[in-house]
Image (cartoon, rainbow, N blue to C red; front, side):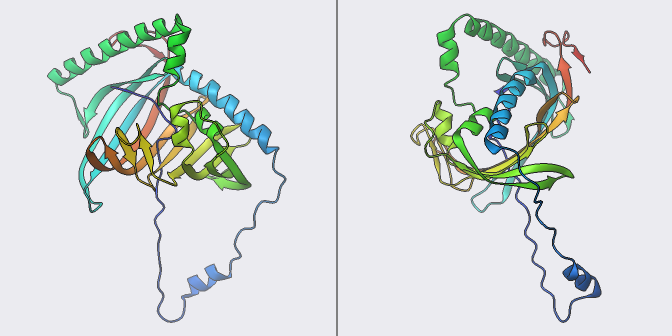
Length: 302
């Protein structure tokens, strides 16, 4: 099982609460109503083009540095029926490793239950084989620039791709979890010429991005598809308008910003199968990876 941590994978819906009061408001309500709303932060913004360029440079470096880490992934997946109700839920826990750009998952448990002895032996064998195969593949790519170029054309998306294919407008200062950030409205850049197939999909995204000004890193990204998306001309898959995601990062070891949370909601079709699905990924317990990952010889440094 191989996956990429794609920043274009996520978003949580905020709940809308409507309160209907009968009669006069309570004293507590009167006090809340008398409190003036917070005023926008009027401090000057940094040079926005420079800020975005710095984010792009940092993100590419982070995508390389991320490969030095392992972590624990908890993946929760809901499948929905045509009425939008959950018809099944599955939770899987993994150890995560990287070989080049590939993310390799080692399954540990399903629905909170560790694999039994037989399943564990089978999973260990599968993981070790995939890990070794990917190491050989990476060695071949390193020795063949043409193969490497073709690999880069695959439909995997990184934050650096997103930064190239989008327009960032309405910059403003906000607070996110007590941290000062700069927020941007995000929409596809119609003048951008896609370099990879995934770029034409990214261009259909709209949303909001929050950035740590000092670290020059993305703290949170939430976006939705402003129009439907077809993959392979619609023969392989299609996503409905409104499919959306959230992506968050946190700083690890005061060194690198790494994914911490991703949430995806989509409705669409894969081949002839119609799907409605919600998924949440939580990344924890990051450790710096040091030597080979074959099970039984894996070591890491905290």
